[in-house]
Amino acid sequence: QVQLEESGGGLVQAGDSLRVSCLVSGGAFSKHNVAWFRQVPGKEREFVVSISRGGTITDYADSMKDRFTISRDNAQNMVFLDMNNLKPEDTAVYYCAARTGYSGRYTHISDYAYWGQGTQVTVSS
Image (cartoon, rainbow, N blue to C red; front, side):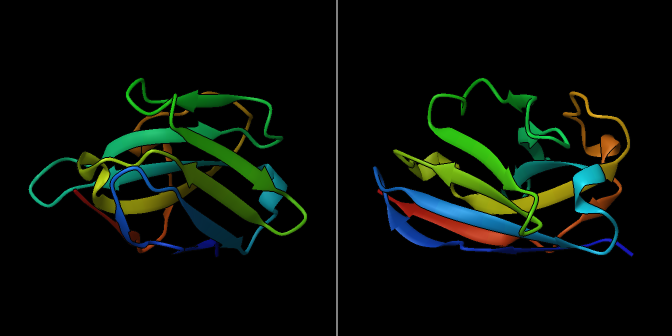
């Protein structure tokens, strides 16, 4: 059973940086493509960024690619999302998601079978 656990969320000010992390357990981590999504109450969950199994393929939502960076450490079974120059509109619950299979570009909610519980990121103005 694959389980994901996010950590690192919190309250920051506009312009600050924050790293959120995702620990993936169960199954072979190196076989998982992993992504971050985020959701604001009352709105649909939206894609943020994804990373392939080996870390060589990344996809970013257009509005975030200049400020956010995804990385993974296969030795630690961890995926990281570094967020810079945060804005109040980045306030959301950030979810980590994983899928097994071939490396590729997976940007849709339906692409992912495994999800974490989410971590709240709040950016004050």
